[in-house]
Image (cartoon, rainbow, N blue to C red):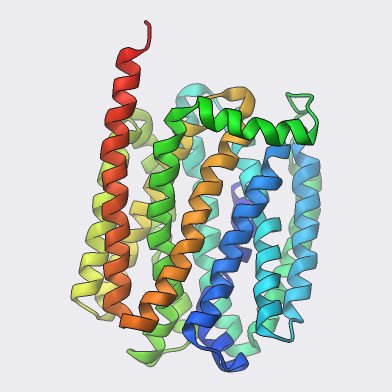
Length: 382
């Protein structure tokens, strides 16, 4: 299931090391091709909103297979895109259908004992983040040697193979609720309104993920303009970032032992330090260290907060995941645009400054929200 998470979510990241290739192919500016990266993140958020809640009322194995085949079809269409607007549309649809990874995470949590849910989320997130990071390495290599269209075609083939494997390996888990789709969607607002402990994790997750996507959206331009390197070298930073994926189970254990508040506080400091270093010292070694710190920090925020969120209301885990991840990927989509805009108007120093501002805002939300949650707990009846 962890490997499946990685293969599915990788589809929304293939475009990032290829942005310079898109700009050259379609004679576009960095701001214009930034919409491609934004579209895949926004599409993922749309899929989370409209497809992920179905996990509470539809058999999850069937849902995952349908989404996997749909994603393969959209990847084929995107590989054939004749214009930049259609490439943007294709990446929007890829994002919307690639979110089947998020159907699997609540299923894994449901199958785990209560005292190991953080570790379970950590294992699943190792697969997911590994897919995100290695997707960039693979896309950079394929893009340089076979062209960007070949990467989307290869992605389609991998999704078909994944669907074949999941047909026989995913467990059958009947849904817990009997609701119509309309009532299910209406209930999302009720879940958000009645679960204030979801608000802080969702906003902090969105802001921290925005720094992540701002970095990866602008990295291709930094590598070309400053270091005179191409998509292959840009993608290699995905291998560096695997340290964050390997740290995920340990982040889950720390969250199980010390709590999400403490764990997230440490993680936000790491992300801020990463962008401070990368902004002050623009060299390949500083980027390597910064990517490690950033990925560990962002990944730790995700693992700690998602494990807590999914334990709030067991009967609505898919809807909780919809709300949490939906807000997070809105942040990711905005981060992609912020990264492209900052690079256009101030290049790398502006990117690091914008990312630093986002993480400071995340820290403020985390501090105020934590106090609000503590006050709620103190005021609740024993």
